[in-house]
Length: 141
Image (cartoon, rainbow, N blue to C red; front, side):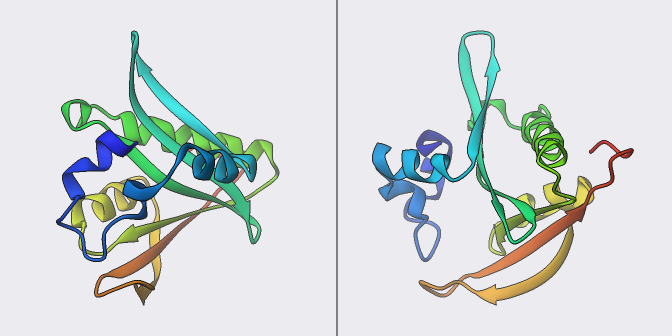
């Protein structure tokens, strides 16, 4: 995850919290929900974490290594997480996106997510959009 976020170091303002996370921080977040890792043969090429939050499955830190982007890896992880949400009895997905990263926003919109809110970033000049997707039992991601 940190390798995938490395390109944003010194670019995003405020900086991503991903750069400062310790293994202990990650363990604590994963304990509240879980995580997924996308593998291509022996190489971990993507990851995301999730937790049930306010009746939805919140997904965060979706990351794909730059050399593997554009291959549908993030989309596959999100479809898998939509199945996780259904298995937990949750009918809604939620993800936060930096508005300064329009390609990320476009990805979620292509996957059927709707921008429902935009708020100032709590630590600086950026804005964070909240996107949601309503799931139905008979309508896989």
